[in-house]
Each structure stands twice: as C-alpha cells, then as structure tokens.
Amino acid sequence: MEHHALVFALIGIIGIGAQWIAWRTGWPAIALMLAAGVLAGPVTGLIMPEETFGELLEPIVSVSVALILFEGGLNLNFRELRKTEGAVSRLVFIGVPVGWLVGAVACYYVAGLVWPVAMLFAGILIVTGPTVVLPLLRQSNVAPRPRAILKWEAIVNDPIGALCAVFTYEYLRRSDEGGTLLSVIISLLGAAVIAGFIGYAVAKVIAWAFPRGHVPEYLKAPVLLVAVIGTFVLSNFIQQETGLLAVTVTGIALANMRMDSMRDIHPFKENITVLLISGVFVLLSASLDLDVLRQFEWRFLAFLVVLLFIVRPVTVLLSLAFSKIPWNERLLLAWIAPRGVVAVAISGLFALRLNQLGYADGSILVALSFAVVIATIIAHGFSIRHVARWLKVTGAQKKGLLLAGSNSWSLALAEQVRSLDLPVTICDTSWERLSGPRQAGIPTYHGEILAESTEERLDITQFQVLVATSQNEAYNALVCNEFAPDFGRDSVYQLGGTGDDEDHRSLPEALQGRAVFTSGIGVEEIIQREREGWTFRKTRISDQFDFKDAQATLPNEANMLFLLSKDGRIRFFTHATRPTPQPGDVMISYGPSRHGTAGQPKAAQKNKEAKA
Image (tube, rainbow, N blue to C red; front, top):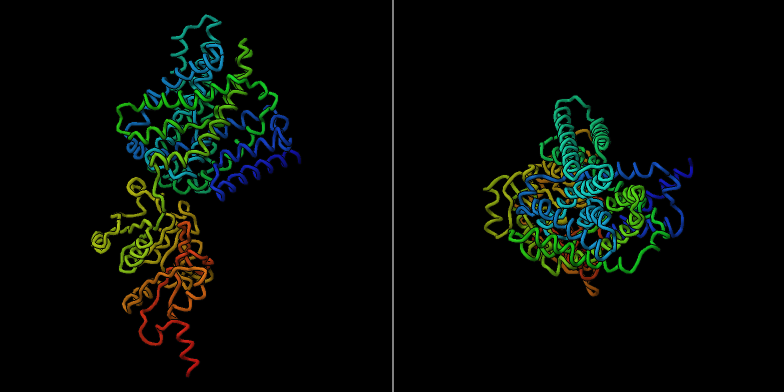
C-alpha cells in the first residue's frame, strides 16, 4: 500500500514538475513529460506502472483519456467553429478517409506491415489528441484560427480514429466467422449512433437538472465527473471504444447549451485535466519497454519520415483544397500533428487482440506507436513556434494591456502604453465614453466585457495584463475576479481595492484584483488628481541611471505605476508586489505636474530643505 502511494506521489511530482519547468523555460511540456516518464520508468525503474497497477492500468488510462476528451469538448463552442471557415468539417469528412488510406499505404509499403495490421494502425494514426495538442497550443503563440482548427481536429478526430481501428479489428475478427464488410459497417454505425445519443442525453439531463437546483452546488462537479465516467463505461459496454465518442458528444453538447452553472465548474475541470494529462503521459512513457524498442528497425525510420513529410501534408492539403484558409495556415496545419496518449493506449490494446487473431505484426505495434509519439512530439513540440513565426501565423508578438472602462485616466494610460509600442485596447459599454479613445486612435471594444459573446469578438490572448478602470470599484473587482483564471491572479489589476479583510464594509481582498498603485488609490482620488493635472511619466533605467536616481527625479507625491522589462513583460507596483527594475527597463509613474514645492522632485526638495 505504501509503495502504491509513493508511486502516485512520484507520478504527480514528475508530471506537474515537468509542466512547471516547461512554463519557466518555454520548452514543450509534452516533450518534458515524455522524457521525465522515460527516465522514471525504463531508465531508473522508479515507476513501473504495469507491476504497480497490473490489470488496473488500462482502465485508469482509458477513464483518464475519457475525462480529458470531455473537458476538451467543453471548450468547443460552435461560435468558434464558424471562424474556421469549414476547415474542421473538411478535416473530418475528407481528411479522415484520405489520412487513413495514405497512412495504410505507408504502413504497408514502408513500415512493412501486413495489410490488415497496416489498415488498423493507419486508423490509429488519424488521432492527434488533446493530450498533446492542448499543451502544445498553450505554450505557443499560434494565431486564433489555426489554433481553433488544431484544437477542434484533435478532440473530434480522437474518437473517430479509435472507431476506425475498432472497425478494422471487428472486420478481421468477424471475417473469420463468416461476417461481411456490410454487416460490420452497419453494426459499428449503429453503435456509434447509440453512443452519440447516450452522450447527448446525458448532456440534456445535466442541462435540465443543474439550473433547476436538483443538484446542490457542492455536488455539481462530482456529479458531472461521475456522469462522464458512467457515460464512457455504458457506451463501451455496447461497443468497445465508442465511449470516447459518447463523452466527446457530452462535452460539446454542454458547451453549446449556455449553462450558467458550468462557468463555476470550468476552473475545477481544467485543473483535473492538467493533472490527468500529466499523470497519463508519465504513466505511459514509464511503461515503455526498452526491449520492445529494440524491435525498432531502420525501415521504421523511413516510415516516420514519410508520416511527417508526406502522409500529414497530403491529408491536410487535399482536405483544405479550394477552401478559404490561407496557404500559410494550411502549411502550419500540414506540419503540426503530434500523437500521444490515445495512439499508444489503443496500439497496446489492439496489439494483444491481433496476436490472438494470429497476426504476428501486431507485436510490433507498441514499438512503432511509441516511435511515432516520440518523433512527432519532438519534431512538432520544438518547432511549432519557429514554424508559426516563419509562416507568419502567430498572434500578437508583443502582448499588451486590456483596459476595462473608458475615462480620461484610462485614455492617458493607453497612450503611454501605445508609446511603448505595446498593444492596448479599451473596453466599455458606452459608445459615448469610447469617443475619446476612438479620436486618439486607440483600439476599442464596444460591449460588456463580462458577456459570453466577448469571447468570440475579442481575442484576449493578445493581452498579458488586464486593468479594470471603471468608476465603479465593485464592478472592477467583478471583472478582475472573472478574468483571473485567464490572465492569472497576479495579472489582473483594478482601480481602488485593497480592502481590509477584517472590515465587513469592504470587499475581501480575495475577490478583488491587485490594486494598481501601492497605496491602493481609489476611483475618487484618481478623478481628483486628474482635475489637478497629474500626468504619466516615462523613465528608462540604465547602468548610469538606476532606480534610485529615477525615484529622485519624481515629485514627492508621485506613484510608481508599472515596469516594462526588456522582454516586454508588464509588472505593476502594487501593495503586494514591488518589482526590482533592471537596466533596460522602462518605468511608468503617475504624479503631479512640477509646479510648486509639492510637485518638486524629491532630490530638489531635499536640497531646498538643507539650504533652509
């Protein structure tokens, strides 16, 4: 028992540790998790999943993949699908059969597999999967449309690839018993339809029960998880591997039913998914048998080259022929197709079944699938940023500032940010209040930033920081609290705030954004200082002119606002954080005009007091 607990702890530490290192270094998380799992498993023997979990390993991985697919489906909104210009439907209805056929030809003629095994393995290779694509997209600056296409393709094609493998296996099994191709097609299509219906029915029940109070708030997340697992298991009882299709349908259906209660569950299920992706990747890579890899033959290397440079490009380019997708985006999509958890898990499952049917090539599927996973993760994980930049398919190179609330102060701040060559946008519900920014040439968004429609009309990935600058401090806190999961709690700021948690008349600090100024200046104080002619100042820090020198030039009452570092990162001075300026950084401060003693620089004030 203690050994099992230790293994669970090691899996969590290794998986999340790899994700953290990826965040700090910018390296691909999937590549680090793969390397960490191999080191912990076959290299050092710290984690031996098959010995530890035995027969439970397969259901653990299967249920984890189902939950990952469900969470991915929850992120698939049909409004986003409309932005893909029909590319996703083309990749499903054209790309799947083309990829299956071309992949089978490559498996047969290059990898040397017999035709039945080649067809089955080619079906598995259709799968890219959210376990690899989502971490890859999270760490890359890909433009919104190709990002959406890759995400939709990964989640939708995941169960389809599994069904293609099931179809081939069932045909091979039933053909020995006198079954026909037509009978296999009819039975599998029927099972897929039933699985889809089950998934949709579960979504409808949840959408009916949650808003009507039939499930208390504290049970909604557990009920949802149990419902997903039950849907997966029930569908698999009807036909193996249709459970993945069912849970994907459940997720997509719920994502498009506009359930308010789902908003509170999103952070929880995203955290669960990160844990599952990390754990499953470590488990499967630790399960790698070095003896199996020794079966790797040189012709497999040629197969990997063909898979990367012929099979995937042909599939995508034929699917998107005559579409509205620009050529640079098509080329990016033709290159990026990492394989991951599902490909390995399904390969291992069918390798055993093919051996039982008498197909000797089934034994090498595990080695070949791991080779595909390793090759695609390394090739695509380390190249996606460079390829996207080379093809000019990236989002904003410099991530800027999003201001929620238009007034004279936010306009002056926006002009300062624009002078630093950073993107800035001002949001407001009032067209009249946005007239000033429009006249100044500042990008604006007219609408309620808290509305669901904002997600499809405003790309928040181009911003690194949000500042709520409306004249209502409670609204500012609401905006910050809503967007904290997207930007990070330390990257949402507001005017006002810094309430005392022990004061029952003020909002708790946990519900607010970080105060824009170290002193927690409120909206009324800002308005008063605007009337008194306070202005923003920009000061560059250097080796000869350090932070203390910069402070000495500021008026006595001036407040340091934020630093822009050399790498383009914005860091505010708040009551909780005080960044340390380095040479090359630019400091933005806010203070009174230099009139009278109160507005004199601190150094000048000290000299005057000394003379007196």
